Image (cartoon, rainbow, N blue to C red; front, top):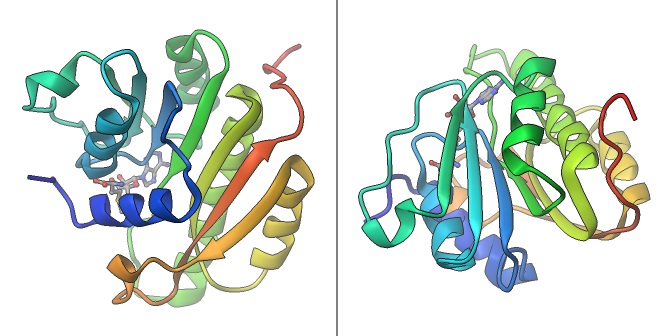
Length: 192
Ligand code: SAM
């Protein structure tokens, strides 16, 4: 079984826009407990790789058919040193970057929304560092101020961007996912 209900959201996103199918190298940000990792590992298959990163430790996948292609890192994606570790682990451009990162909920929507947008921007910066030309990017963000600006920034870098609220996340109605397809340019590693 899947570790999280979130697994079904990634399936819906992939059904909608073919984000991962046929791709080999995926980076999964905010990956704990690992539902998206399971789905991504199934989709890339034995020749693919999936790197999962989270503040929390991610338990190894139980399914022996999926463990070989998965690597996990524990770290804070708002810190440069974690991004550097991801770049190192990826060892070259990747095909897909997915982020389901979400802040710890304070209960104050404006604060949670601002933090969510900050995490989404960190995911976008990471994608710009490691995503190959033609690669895809999926990112969760809570609806609110400045999300349109963020979308416009993502649109500048991809062939197109689609916004969707997967059925599996109906309960948390404020969250949307941007699916950005076809990166237009090549990654620029930090310091280059
Ligand atoms: N996609 C996951 C799955 O299918 O199991 C669920 C992800 S959960 C909704 C959001 C995750 O984002 C949490 O595990 C949280 O620890 C992580 N997160 C939040 N801030 C983060 C940060 N700064 N760096 C890395 N992970 C972060």
